[in-house]
Image 1 (cartoon, rainbow, N blue to C red):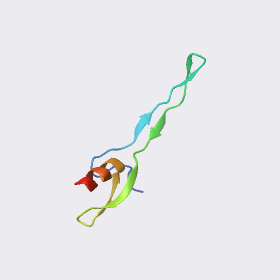
Image 2: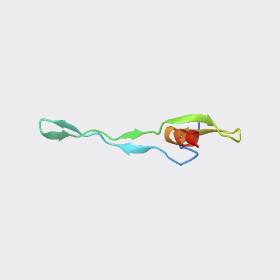
Image 3: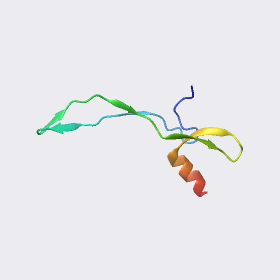
Image 4: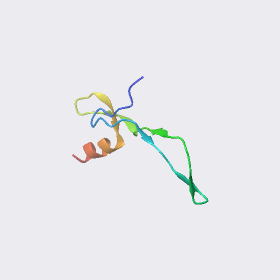
Length: 62
């Protein structure tokens, strides 16, 4: 399986925490891993790569 990393900018997964406030106190919640929005894109050279949505927007404007 392909690694979940953007080939253009190198963006990869990170840990995210959502704090839930309940009656004035924070409810301890587990950490969850957030993954980048990766899509298959064909570059100008004809090569197919995984790129994040931000890089796709950036390259389409050029």
